[in-house]
Length: 501
Image (cartoon, rainbow, N blue to C red):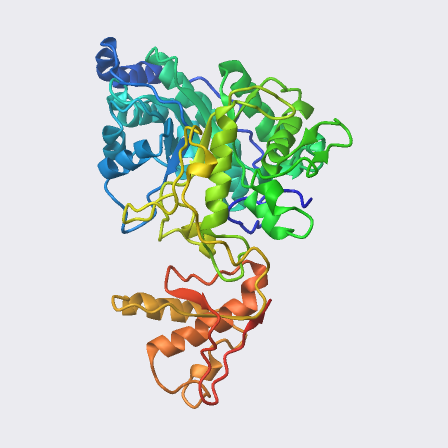
């Protein structure tokens, strides 16, 4: 097995020093400030005295409803699609008022999120936290069944905000929780989402360990808060990534919940037996919490899923596997099995995602996690209540990319009649500006200068940039202007170099 587990999108970590003044050492605001903050909540607090109306309660798995697309259905249409999946809850990546209004009266449990960039200010100022709750949560309390407030999204994976934000996380969480309690709200759990890369060691599961630079400074105070408030550790766990990085040693059926009696793994320390990769991942987090003496903190899955498509070199990203993963997961979770380390424990879980979102940056898989296309047609059928028998689903085309792609790949301009020429030229200049003679061949007199076309020159620049920096994490995307191809774009004496897989 390949561990530690990668997260859904790699962030290259530059080195930043930790602050010398821990933000977790809060100073109480002066009485005048406390008084002013309470006043800002009073009008909406009074509106909470009437009973909320939430309609029927639902019990299927949750759905992550992202909005990074320029062609997505309206919130009202999206809520209808979520309900058609038999979902029981929905998680959004902000506190969008239109979406929260569309969710009113549906009975769906709702998780809202505080953007990463607001964490430092919310940590430093109780009034800022009060104002955020007053504006983004309280107006929807009577009609929308908000149950989780997540502060930031995978912030411990982003080293670019290490100095400004990591140590502000728990103080921000505490301030927001204090704001909620001041309004006598007791049924909203506050937490944050963390990727699997919060662990430095995750195999075998019993050896799960948090990264040294966060274990004491962030994780211990976070887990202390979660225990005290009976909230959840929200983890993003994607078996696709460890499998795709080592498909030789990790069986695909083990990753897709299709393991037979002879396909299992026994942890050499705990002696627990595993029949799927998902449980291994979760139990490594449980073990890491246990090493800090927090065996009792509850676990929830903020994101999991399988991509339905991707780039040519992204193995196993197809509709067949995505349907198998989510259908099998739904059937499994309906039985409330827990994990080998915590059997028969109910666990909130959200599938990523509702839509294929065409404006998500990164490799092709980032734009292909949806259960629906933007035109509201299902990518595949799935019942998130887990009640539908697997044999009742219609057949899907068999996959052709469950093995590593063999052959040359190029990165070229994706085309499109409505391409913004200014944006295309900007992307070309970016690729050319990275040095190493990337664009020498498209300068006047160069082998690829003619035809003197922005589209042709962009293809050359995109391709050479990607070939040079691919192993350092570069993707063939360029804000949606580039795409991989197996067709050689070379012409005449202009020969495009390729990647051989």
